[in-house]
Image 1: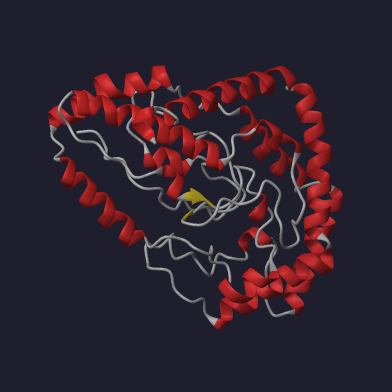
Image 2: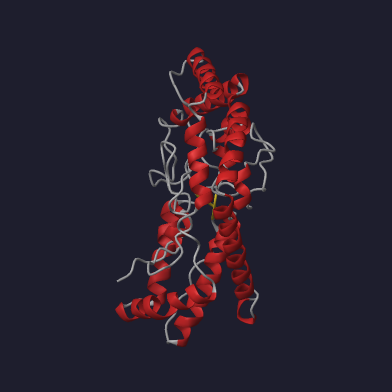
Amino acid sequence: MLAKPLRMAAAVATCAAVATGAYAATYNGRGNGHSTAQEAASRPQPVAAQRLAQPQRVPQHGLVKGMRLPVEDYMLSNADTAQVEDARSAVESACMQRHGFTFNPPSARSSVPVGYDEANMERRYGLADETVAGTHGYQLPGVADPSQEQAESDAEEKAEGRTDAWDKVLDEECIPEANEKVGIIDPTDPAGELSAQSFEATKTQAPVTKALAAWSSCMNRAGHSLRSPLDAAADFPSDAAVGRSPSKPSRAEVRTATADVTCKKSSGLVAVWYKAEVAYQAKQIAAHKNQLQTQKSRDAKLIGNARAVLAGPDNH
C-alpha cells in the first residue's frame, strides 16, 4: 500500500543541509508525480511544522528584521506551497468520492513551516531574536505535538477505510488528475539550490569568517566553547526532533541561546553575513536569469491553478 499522507512533521538538521520542502513532501508524499515541494534544496536551520499565522514576507523582529534575500523573489512562499497542496487534495478528494471512496486530508494551510519561504530568514544564521531566546531557548514557538499529529493521522486513515483498492484508485486515477488540474511543484528548485550555494559559499568569505571568529570569542567568554552558531543548538535538540511534546526549555538552554543572540549582535555576524549573501546572489541571479524566470512563471501558473480549484463551488 502507498504511504499514508501525514500532517506536516518536523524535519531536523544539525548543519546547513536539510530538505526545505520536507513538510509538503511528508504531508502529501504519495509518489507517482505528486508534489515534493523543492526537496532538492537546503535550509541552514531546522524546519518544523507549526499552527501559527504565516510569517511576514520580511522578518519583523530580531537581528534579521527587514532582511530579504534577492533569490527569494523566485521562491514559492510556504503559504503558496500549502495552497497548492490543498488544491491537489481537493481534486483528489473529489475524485475518490466519484469512485466511492472517502479521502479527507487535513488542510496543509493549518500547519506551515516556520519562515516565510525556504530561505528561512528567521533562522537562516541561527537564532536571531533575543526575545525568543529568553522565552523558548532554541525551540521553535508553536510547534505541534508530534504524538498528537500522529494520532490525528492514524484516526484519519482509519476513518477513510483504506484498502489496496483505495490506494490503487488514488495512485492511478486521482493523483494523475491532480497533476493535470493543478500541477506539480518543480522538484529541481533552482532558486532553492542557489540559496543553499550562497549560504555555503559566503561562510568562508573573509568578512564572514572574521565575524564568526568574533562571535566564537564572545561565546567563549560567556562560558560556551563553540565555533559556529550552527552548532549552538546541538546540545538542545528540538522537541519535535526527538518526538516529544513541546516543553519549557531548561535554564541552561535559555542562557546559551541568549548568549548566542547577544554575541551575534556584538560581532555583527548576521548583518555581515547577510550583506555577503546579497552581493553573492546578485551575481548568481545574473548568471541564471532565464532559469529563474522560467521557474517563476511556472510557479505563477501553479498558484493560479490552485486558487482556481480552491475557489470552485465545491471548495467554499
